[in-house]
Image 1 (cartoon, one colour):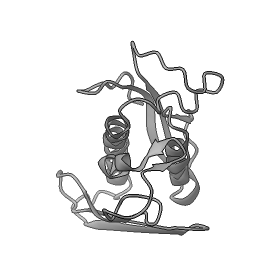
Image 2 (cartoon, rainbow, N blue to C red; image 1 turned 90 degrees about the vertical axis):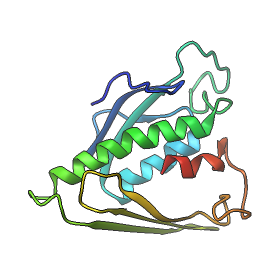
Image 3 (tube, rainbow, N blue to C red; image 1 turned 180 degrees about the horizontal axis):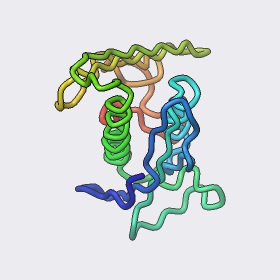
Image 4 (cartoon, rainbow, N blue to C red; image 1 turned 180 degrees about the vertical axis):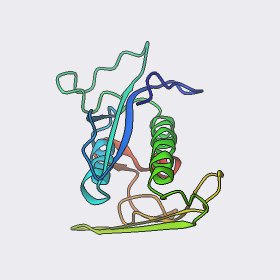
Length: 168
């Protein structure tokens, strides 16, 4: 696990982990309820046990004080989501390299589609097999996101959809 990641972010991450075909030791608590739900889909559909806890040191929030579910909804969500995405991406890369059976030079592509009641989510990720970053080849969340630009809503629950692309 990575503890106390802050980098150049206002947010501190703890309990960051990705476990192949298993359950993570800790839960998911980003402070944005629908973002937690999205991350939990990695547990359900990708069978990658993901955990992350986000705090904002020095910032007092009042939303959902009883549950903490949307405690960071009024903060800079694109920054929060990008910080979580970078940390989980690093952990996913480690997991991918560990499971490559010694051949880290192999290119990998992953495509995920999830038909929902009123939306189709599609995400295509590539990893070129070297030490460079992978890439987001395609991402669609219409009609409930703003990607592609000009479509959908700006929020899902308390989550701002403009933070989804920086996450990837």
